Amino acid sequence: MTGIKPLRLLFVTGTLSPGGAELHLLKLLRVLDPSLVESHVIHFAYGDLYEEYQKTPAVLHFIERGTGSFPVKLLRSVLAFMKTVKQINPDVINSQLPETNLLTCFLVGRKYPIVVSERGLGRTRKPWERLLRKTAYRRASHFLANSPATVRRMLERERIPVRRVSLINNIIDVPSVSVSHVQETGREEGEVLVMAVGGLREVKGFSHLINATGILSDIIPGISLAIVGEGPERSSLEELIRQLQLGDRIALLGYRADAVDLLSTADVFVSSSLSEGQSNSILEAMALGVPIVATSVGGTTSLLANGDAGILVPPGDPATLAEGIRQCISEGREAQMRVEKAKEIIRNSHSPETIRNQYMAIYEMLAKRGDQCS
Image (cartoon, rainbow, N blue to C red):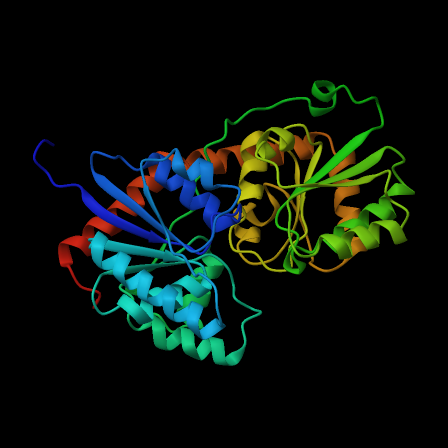
């Protein structure tokens, strides 16, 4: 391979906080071959993942917004962004997250091949934002989605031609293990640890999970819930816990760099999301062999093989969620069969090598073509 010029890739993201998109990009940067690619990352805010990003081969470029009125800060950001892109002069740009996708498409979409990564269903977007997105996306070269549900959204609502949309799963790089969680953590018989991982935002449905825990506390005296993650809903969730008098059963652990290690100690993992593309935390639970209860939203249903790899329940219903958790705890052979199916899915469809090769095929195709019109 000597003498071959590395492919220059520019990734654009909003923040380096531990969201699903940011974690997936971090994993991708770790597995890209530095002898084949030169990676750059533009970000507009720091976050808890900054040190981890620094450990990758990628060059980080922080866009300073500075002080002043909103128009002044916006103009400063736009000028700095365009200047940085010009200096990097990438072969391909890969943008992710709603705001940065718009920014990238509108500002540089006619000058460079752009890959737009879409991870969610976008159900909360206002009509004007959807119209703006359709206009911006005409300037993009290719679109990546991480679940069949997101692909359908791109084809049906965004009206993207099928030839310009690819499905690439999330990378999962945790060891696939099977452990006795109760024995490993020293919990006594009858004690059950339920865990959830995600940003404390309304879309994650944690209020429903807390209410479900309240229902289960009368049925399973030893049950407890730990939620790993931080976000704007913390104060309202803390108030709900106080109202239900569940302070001795529910802990909001905040952001934890060792979230995967914590997850490996859980007896049940729960995803209570109201909308979801492809959840990294569900995938990690699958790889770790932790039984799963999840709401049947977005990409979760197909990810869990329509219930063969985890128990699926309707979203926004604490009573049904509680029953799903109770069923998961009481199952024997059925739970183990779901765990084995989940680990098989991870092995076959989410390995770092498989996902890296899929990304590289798209990047190389666009760089060779050199334009965004397909």
